Image (cartoon, rainbow, N blue to C red; front, side):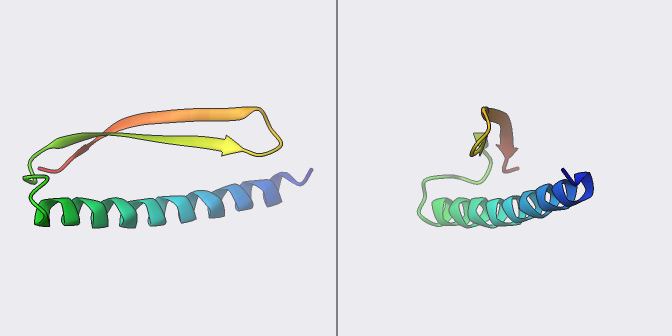
Length: 68
């Protein structure tokens, strides 16, 4: 195993996940506010599950999104 190659591919994957997740969340929050489903002052629970094919890895990370 090449530790450096693994590290770089993990970082690249996490960067892609981070950027695309942020864009998806921002878009959904803006639409919900426009549609009147949110006021823009809420705190929303958030969770992300990481699964790795070929490995017995399934980890869920929980958090909170504060809109104000």
